[in-house]
Amino acid sequence: MKLAPPAQKPVTPRLIITSIVAASALMLSGCGGSSSSDGHDHTEIETAGRLAIYDSTGSQIKVMDLDDGSILEQFPLDGEAPRLYRSPNARYGVVIQRGDDLVSFVDSGLYTEDHGDHMHDYAETPSMPSLTLNDHRPTHYSLGEEYGVVFYDGAASAANAKVTVFSDHSLESNSEVASLGRDNNMHGVAKMVGDRLFVTRRDSSITDTTLPAEVERYQLDGGSFTHEHLYAEQCPRLHGAAANHHALAFGCSDGVLVIDLEDDTFPAEKLDNPPTLIDGSRIGTLVAHHDVDALVGIAGNQLFVINPEDAEPYLELTLGEGVTRIAQGFDGHGETFYVFGNDGKLRLFDPADGWLLAATLDVMEPLAEGDQVAFTESASEDRLFALTPDGQSIIEIDTHEREVLRTIALGFQAASLVWLGLMDDHDHDHAH
Image 1 (cartoon, rainbow, N blue to C red):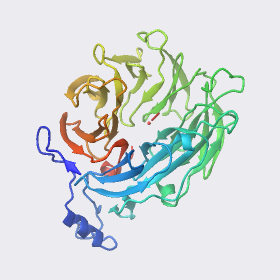
Image 2: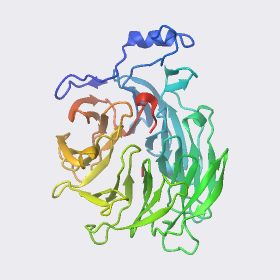
Image 3: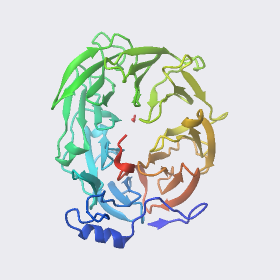
Image 4: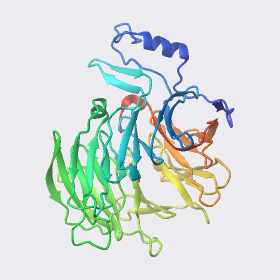
């Protein structure tokens, strides 16, 4: 494992831990590791976190310590190359293998326990829990404040669609929180907001597509769901969903369905498509951050900031002529919305400053046709990690200072990655 020198200046992460401190922390018993005189302050481990990386050559998931670049553990993984996501509290990696009808998990070893009068951080050896979720075609994963949700598409001749909900707490005991079966197969989506589940419904009369056209609401009560409401507002060929602290949005072929999360009755309204939307296109992907008021709708290479309460709800972001969008998202704190283009440049927009294009960074050489770049965001620092198209290197970017920090040479060929670790201040705030 080789860590290349910083691109512009020495890397100075806000959270760094030395091996001596780490060893000392592991030797402490109970809560004696507190830095306070009474032993009841937050027992804090300082670390930049870990990356779970899929090694496509070795068919393994490797867990890297970002503090020193070492591989802490590696786990063999049979079957197809997975998509990797994080659990709500970022302790676990969620490993989805759609073609194998399988969801499994990787425990990063970094987590926080509430000891009543203080919080206590732990740094342990990564592991792979025995829990697996085995249902037909796990396709859409939705990340929420407290819950992760997997939507299984099912198949017409094999199985109906299904939703499974879990939390970091349930994963600690190798269990899920609850599941909900659907009446037929569909390419759908579900979002948990508090104790409410918003999930798609495909009427049996729809036979020309597996995309749903309606949304239902359920309430989670213990380990089961109780039906509350079927929304009358239609959302034909529904695809994509995202939520912030006050709105939940679904992409429709004719606009965007928005549900008000601040009203106890959760009313819905339908927005027409943006006036500048290219003919024949539609918003099919949505991105949101809990602490950002607006959402972002994506239609091919067009990106629209969506403020549902405004008289003119759409603001289009421009990437530049001829630029193809490759990846996008919010950084961990929601202070930056990033878009990476096929020109190798990373565009950083500032939501707090009218979505101004604050910086454009040269991250790598322009991409060849068909190249892909995977991104993951730290939830503890203003950091992005980009996996290069050849899978050989990871580029670290500071979104606050708006600069490239370093390149990590892997020594193996990776296909996907996800950041895991201790979330900033342990406030826990999307992915198709």
